[in-house]
Amino acid sequence: YLFWKICEIAAEVSLPLQCHTGMGQIINTDILQLNNVIKNNPETKFVLLHCGFPWVDDILSMVDGYHNVYPDLTWVPILSYTASNRILHQLIEMTQIDKLCWGCDTWTSEESYGAVLAFRRVVSEVLSEMCQEGYLSCEEACYTAGQIWRGNALKLFGFED
Image 1: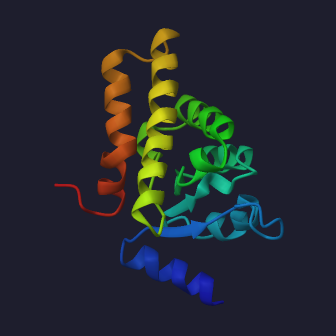
Image 2: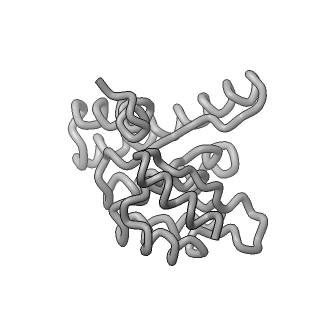
């Protein structure tokens, strides 16, 4: 009851709801556990932290199925470079660029710096590869990087000019 009420309030005040997902705790942490609540709260914007790692493929069906789902790649590059590279590539291919987010979600400056370095590597490699393949132009890749790093979060959380 309480979580559903929080979803209603988040929609009423136009604030996105961040949900921790995955992180390998096995029971009830995969993204599909949120299917019913996301489906029945279409006005609530759900930011799914960690993309459900290690069940990252589930984020693809959720993003494709619901307009109110925002994948957040927080911690995924630190947990698995391979998974983060693959999921970012797929998310760019199948979603609107303006839905992809990344946050730090760390407690120390050392963790924050490591998270930034890891995600910078993933974003630059994925976008470079997509440019080389001809999927994105250099300008589109630069725009996409800016949106993932900053622009999407500013808009999503209501800080955009």
